[in-house]
Length: 482
Image 1: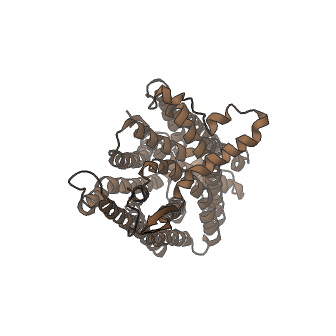
Image 2: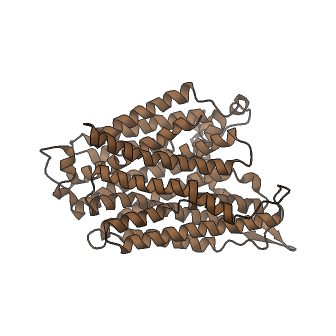
Image 3: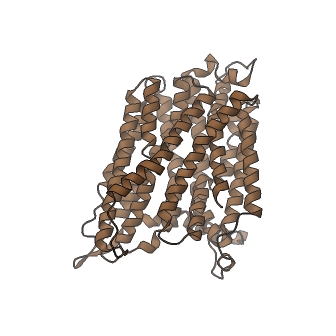
């Protein structure tokens, strides 16, 4: 039933490399490179477009696009999640797809335009996508839809399989795009047409075939709606109330990471385990934004074509899929503490699972940091490929962190709040991706002419800090109120 939505990941993989080309194209024109007399691709990869000035400008354009989208997404994620709880998941899916079609239309227009206003017009796409919540909302609602349709206890395996399936779609996309551009007359920018067609098919499927997961009695509950649902009925005289609801919709999801009061012996104390996990998750998500710079760095450092860049992206996605489908399940099978014979978790078994998730998350993040350090120290194209793939094999960090958060809540007696982690992590994603492009773009633009691989050291530093925060999580002395 959910398989057609894998097409979304496939089309995303098909257009990732062309988007990098669009950023370089706009930057090349902005710094005053000569107008192309041959094909657009010849223009993009001309010598004038390989200068440090163009590379720095392209990274800033990319950062502007990502920052605007994620700032708006961070403000709207909580609202859309609440709106979907009351009005249905399908409605949120439809809004998301329509805004993604608009974004692709903007990229398509900019890729063939030479008006001099492309740098400003390209921002229309991320504005539309950000208002719809971007990938944070789509992924959050996607997980919520699966939760609606599956019984308790089976979701962890399903979420892991779904994430692996998404990576498979992302890995297939560049190969499809490379084959189409190699054996047909299509250009890399033709992928935007195909992406739009796929999105329209998904929109038709969602509207007319895709079943709603929330029962009608829940969609039209007598309980007053919050966020967008309530704001849609607000009048101008209630602007202050709307602002209050908007702020609450943004802030309320992340309160899941607040310190908890627990009993330890005869006294009350604050437990910061979930807080440390949230901070570590935030730093981890911020570090993953380096992947976008890896694409830009590889293209500029090794003069990759759009097809070669697509194959590199595909290698990373395949590595992530293999890790999630093969490596991580093997690690879990051999090292995860065994479930009690009774099938009911005890406080002791919860502590053991917490320790396991903590070590798994720490190991994944440490190897990721090591891979980024090795990328920074290497200079050859082969080493860049190898260490990038090594970093991709640490994709288990995200599910390990989310599992750790759920176990921390269960150990404190708040297992009923585990579902709120999805919305909270979505907000963390949006906020992190709002600031991370600026961090990497500023670093890259300042060091691109001297040592462009400095940005990888920044990512490694964030990951090592996250590992240290995870080390602060303690299993001993936790509440037995589970």
